[in-house]
Length: 462
Image (cartoon, rainbow, N blue to C red; front, side):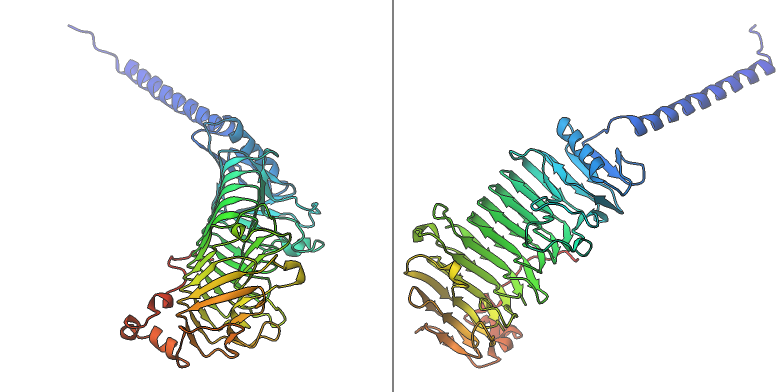
């Protein structure tokens, strides 16, 4: 027969077992707490917060210090990919943020990077820039907000290179998307001598220069952005090739320049692969699109074949004192093709050959622009830009239009100034508007495709 275990002995063992389990649980909890508080980040993401729960924690002052520590950590440990800014929080910076190659800098939509009041930075010092002065690559910036804090840094002038939000030189494979950027003195994203640049799904409001400014670069695409200009343009390229701007909405609120700006000034730079399509440009201060070649003599083969199609221009060129107001204003580019665009209520002229100032004189002569299958209606007079012409060739000694099958109606200054066509069609005032509201009429309308010009994708709300 086996011996019976005394009841008090079994009770003691139960107590020991329970106490042991509790001690093990407490020890595990302490180890877990200490590891989460003091160990290196795990996974692929390094978190930056302001509430003490992150891998790096900011305190609302000089927050670039901790953000740069996080970015440096990811750069030094390639098993990590991302620095993530947790919101809701405003990260106030007093110096630049430096991002390296193969790194994602992203954050919650409620995470805000903001330059401090009265920062006093020197010219061309940006909020976010490259880690290596020789250039970086494969950079992604997405998801959060950037506040340029314009009004609390009013000692600087806009458009002079101060407080650019992002600036990269000799860098490639750059993506900036789903960012809300606003109220700055300079550019949103500026890239010089770069390649493979994508700028999309951003909301940009009243910057101090261009939302996107690309210089001496190649392979650039910008799409699905909502931009309100204040000082210069929405999208701008300078001596840059292989460009696609599409499905953007660009406007002004009584300030700024062109919605989209294309410039060539370097004889050695070729610009022959630029496409602008499916954009809505409305109430811009100056031209909806401004294209200009100028400076030292260059071959027309190095500035040619810009393709502008399926855009909508609505009341572009609101500034009565701007000679370059209108829908499209251009000079110095050969064989530009403008087709299937809808121009409604533009000021001065819907399409014009103009030299904005003497400094923008194109070398030589013989430049031709092809305009076909567009709808041009309701063009309005402008004190400086013209009486409201559909087509205005102010450079008729050096530039000419080829006009084919355009639909024209109710243009205050008349359909042509120093231009002519034998195939354009004039319709009664209000007829195009009537067709646009009647599906059966639209089916038989020769310019039904043009009526649907403009963005074909949904846009993020601000």
